[in-house]
Length: 293
Image 1 (spheres, rainbow, N blue to C red):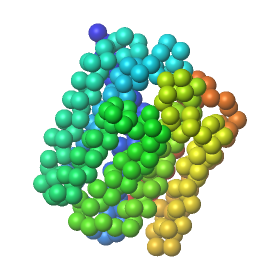
Image 2 (spheres, rainbow, N blue to C red):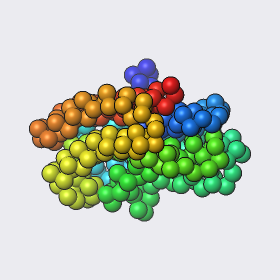
Image 3 (spheres, rainbow, N blue to C red):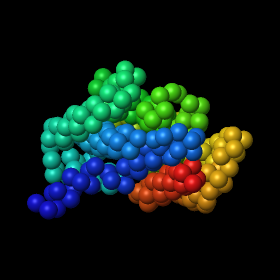
Image 4 (cartoon, rainbow, N blue to C red):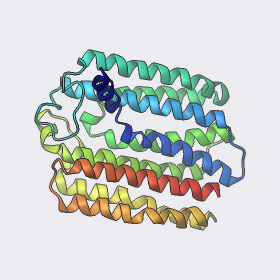
């Protein structure tokens, strides 16, 4: 029983949950840096909703990929609970749906504070989470997964939490959302490059399948380094501390890019995924600390 519970928890993909954590923390720190007040309850409910949407997305992805044949015994990525027979695809889908329902409940206080625009963001987020691999137009199978991550785990997450605190859309939140979103997308780009051969067999047309290994490597490099280039904006706007402090994460970006360029897609990429998660987390936390202090 304990091993089954552990397997289910691993199916939540805890190492990827930094994608939900970082935008909420960084967006809140930006509000503080601008000199405006921030609401601790907004941060709490936004974190809970983001975590639940991401976990729900991961579970639906697990079940649907198994149903469509993308996850088989030949899979080179980490074990999936549906593929391993620990839970049925329907059970995993039900668990994912429960996470989406709980995310909606966590979003109610945010709606009460932010109004109709937060309703729209919430509905879009849940629908995109489900439609990442499920539904008639699964984003991941159409090569739109990368754009989904930039939008949800970058722009919507950061701009939404800033709006909830200050009641307006701000260009600073847009830039920060792009930075966080680009680094979050490194994870999915590495994942798709690793699984390129298997995905092609089941007609999962990720960008790696559509445009090949060389394109994917340069995509990953661009996603790694563009957030550092965008630090120019913070420097020009007078936020020099976050612009400088976040450069400490640059060696991680170099390491991830070098590894992807010098290693053929294989199980080795599982390690690179951990490094990419570290880049996303460290860069985001450094920006957060820079804005906070």
